[in-house]
Length: 195
View 1: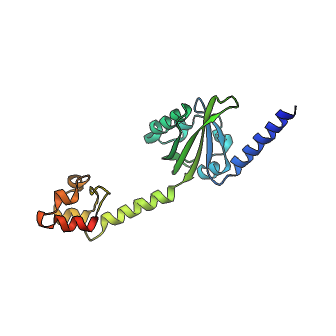
View 2: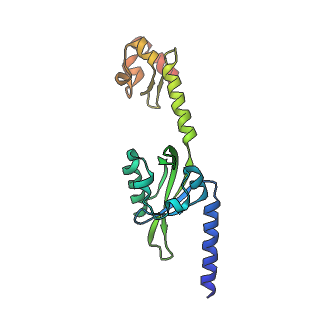
View 3: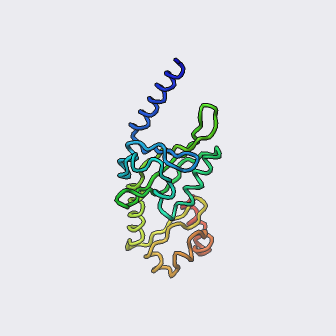
């Protein structure tokens, strides 16, 4: 009687919170079929919950180049290994891509049995586009631009750097800038700039 009524009221409250959240939230059952699709996911993709419920999320809504990786994230979550900050594209109803940053969490029933995965996402399409634009601007700049990671390995090498040095990006990427490309008489002073 009362326990069931209270549990149903709680489940309805959870459903309302999920549906009105300001992040795309979707869920799959243990077979990968969509069983949760909130309004934000609908707004982001153009697919209503009616469009997607019961359909295979990975096979039908993930781009081919990411199907295997997304399936692995869901498989891990179904085995209790959750994933945070996984980036992947979703296919929209018009056929475009939206980039999503996802946290995949294992869903369990009242007896703690795994029943699926819920994904809480964030639309990062604008951020990805901005990063790509920055990369294009750096590459096309009329000054040599290079970058290094925390270990001192080259991770940026633009077209002007290629023209100036004669080293193609493939020749330098991942190699230690100071040790491999700076003459001995300047190694200490250049290294000093980076530390």
